[in-house]
Length: 88
Image (cartoon, rainbow, N blue to C red):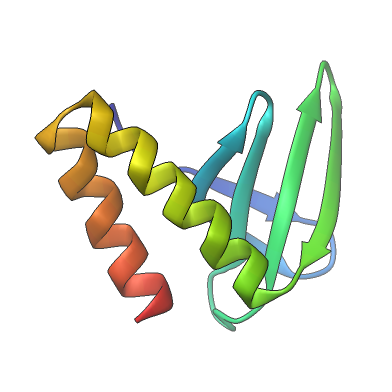
């Protein structure tokens, strides 16, 4: 599984995926100003961006780490590395 995914925001430019939140929703951060976080919902051909606070993004990323831990050590280590680069 590749965790590296990018998305182009119409105003803030390139975003990178920080964590999977739930079905059809993912947490993204701005690539250059890494303290803006978005909860991105994809439904069909529609994409919605919702700005979320840092602590909410961190909480969702921690939940994603817990899910990855159950999937296995390889998935967990990949997501852990991304979490550390983003939030620590």
